[in-house]
Image 1 (cartoon, rainbow, N blue to C red):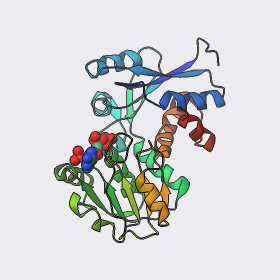
Image 2: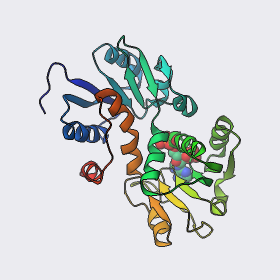
Image 3: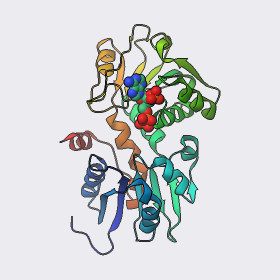
Image 4: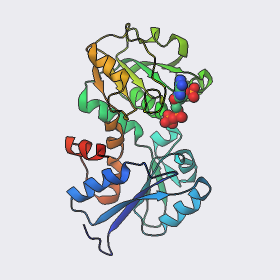
Length: 276
Ligand code: ATR
């Protein structure tokens, strides 16, 4: 699609940015909806983040996504932030106001739960979350807001899990990494937010014997799409939800704010984004 002088422009700030799938996914929606607009990768080193952000806010950009390693710095750089960004302590979506105000939000919790809802029926209950990084924070916020009665948070570095639990409230209890297999008893949902199982990383060593077969199992790793955890869970009858949908759904609110159209996550989009 050719751009006019009135084209709506957005992008994604990261460092590095060349592996980001966001330009591809927003490009798919822009093309499908025949929008006079563009979404471009922006390679921004950490030391230049805040000056580039201010520059973009004064350049006619509608807004930007923010990815690794800038999400926490983005949180500190915004004029206003939404409630989820405050709870997660990070911003992934920025909308510039007409006078250049910088408004930050975090759509990762939304992306996580929308992805679960697309494939499974989560009605709440005991939840088990592996990992305690930024992704775990978003997953815990989503689970707490959608009926989790308790969350057992399990991380190799226990102090990180304890910090997350103390910040997000009393429904989260911390378990030792060694006891991860036993924590699965009575769980309604199990989510891996660690990098274990990702291409190039060690496998996730987890025995599923105690996990009810009625539990939903999700992995935020999506390379490979079917991780060992998901394959094992599927084989014993659990409903599994892969991690690609979280990436796709978290992009929807930004796209709607910048380009004025509410986009959908479809099988066509999944295929398009997975193409090498
Ligand atoms: P993100 O922000 O994407 O969640 P992160 O902050 O780097 O990424 O978190 C990665 C998660 O994977 C952490 O929970 C990390 O555990 P630690 O907090 O102990 O580092 C977990 N992780 C990475 N490699 C691991 C390994 N070999 N064994 C167990 N956990 C691992």
